[in-house]
Image (cartoon, rainbow, N blue to C red; front, side, top):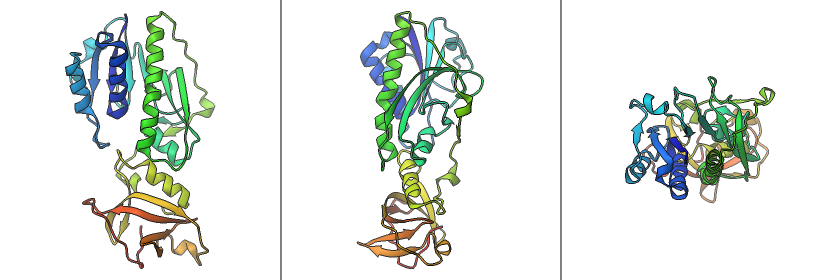
Length: 295
């Protein structure tokens, strides 16, 4: 049986690794590399490490020297949720959570949810010198229904990752040649990483997009934010409600227009959102006065 090496991070990496061991056994894995990820909560690094140790599979942190291991013959390398350079690209297959060539790069799932894509998916591709431009080995998609929060979509996409990993591994062991197709550059788009400023709400968006943004950057990510009285407020949950005509609307975006059922309602460029759950920097609920404005 051919062996594979896993470069995995976060929940999807842990999910695939656990399922792979259950289905194919520990002897099918040559080694496992993982890394901590400070950009998400609950990055599963310790869980991945513990699973490798329990299964008696060689485990390495990405900072350890792995040059010799990367050069092992007849070992395919599967990268899932991986954000770092793997120097030896021979037999390296990357699993990316978008339907390439759309959303190459970082945070593709987040950005696809903000943009209300109707289908999500995973692409398996051969690595090359330019990120996410390699030839496509396989793809699998799934339907997206809105409203939906990012943690629910992560649960939805994890089995899709495993399906592709399982199929490709079985093909390798059957001696099936992995055919790959070139990406259509005319359809390519790029998704950029998120820094701290990118988590702040753009009040010039309509209420529907603001709702999707809040849902897309919630747990396990840092969460949507806005300023209120010069303090940072985190948005956990909101809902879109029926709009009203607002005089000189452009001057009042971000203002609380009503308190409805005890919850503030905020004016957007188009539409209204009701703040169901907002928190301060200590994660305590925030109660907003009528004469308040978010920036």
